[in-house]
Image (cartoon, rainbow, N blue to C red):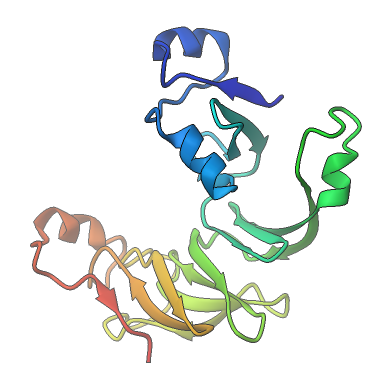
Length: 219
């Protein structure tokens, strides 16, 4: 799929959808904000199977979609970008020299990401990920309800599980999904329930009170 210019913030979304395979809407300030920050956004959508790179020229947004197999969690650090897919994690690296000399559009892109590593994890529904202080790739393993390390020795190595999880089974028992790091080590993880049965969190979230604590500290 080719890159797409999008100014749907000022156009009718139905008209945009008729011109392109997908459309988006955004606040008018977003293109200017991204230009001021001198950054792009990477967005994964597992429903459509795409990773979208969103950039701005100061006036319009530019969308560059690429196809992945059910992309979910992503993490960027330095020149690396890791994308968790249906059965593996793909690590890409970028180099500005490759972007400037991209044959189809020379001197257009700032950089170019290319695949460099692939870790075969199996179907673990990996959500948030991060590289720790030692350079290891960590992730919230949603299917197995644990925080894990991915290094190529195994599909994954469990590092921590919530105290209410009795056994690691691919049953998405609490929908462990969020990860916050501090000084290169995990600080907090989040889940959608404190349940210990197959997808028990689904019923829990329907009854959850706003006062309930949904974040825990790995110890």
